[in-house]
Image (tube, rainbow, N blue to C red; front, side):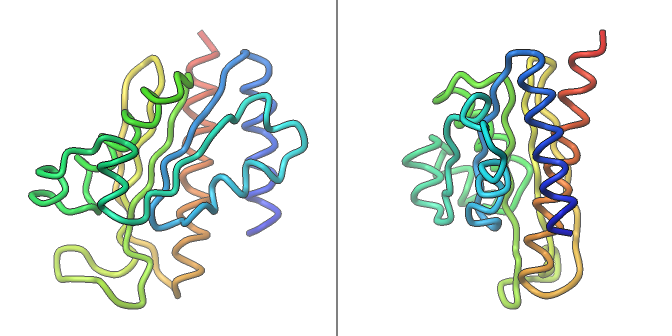
Amino acid sequence: MRNYIAELSKDLGSMLLSCGATVTVAESCTGGGLASAITEIDGSSKWFGVGFVTYSDLFKHKLLKVPTRLIQEEGSVSEAVVRSMVEGAVNLTSAEYGLAVSGIAGPTGGRANKPVGTVWFAWKSAEGTDAKRLVFSGDRGMVRAQAIEFSLKQLLHIVKRSNTV
């Protein structure tokens, strides 16, 4: 899976370079894994300037301006919160593309309506903001790796779609 994530990051970088765009990420459950995957690529500073690891609710609010009320009402693993995270990251950086992820990697923390493996994603581009919820299986590391892979794959798809008009 690691090689595939590296391929996705490389393809994403090539696509962003070709259209002169940049990306930012706001991460929670992946704990910097997205930024790490992106910065494994030589020259990534040309298309990736900053990522935010906002693992705690406090810093989702302080750094990304996610409303505290939203976190309290919806929970940090929710569509509303990841949408707010990606909006905050893009607003702070002026990147053309944004990606946010928040989930429950486990092994604890799950509930009936949000089991371990639940991950919410949001992607932002000039075309708007998309969000999706998936439930992954496996241990903590597997959930995080699957979340990184899926989010990069979807972001690459969005960048391609935006630039094939």
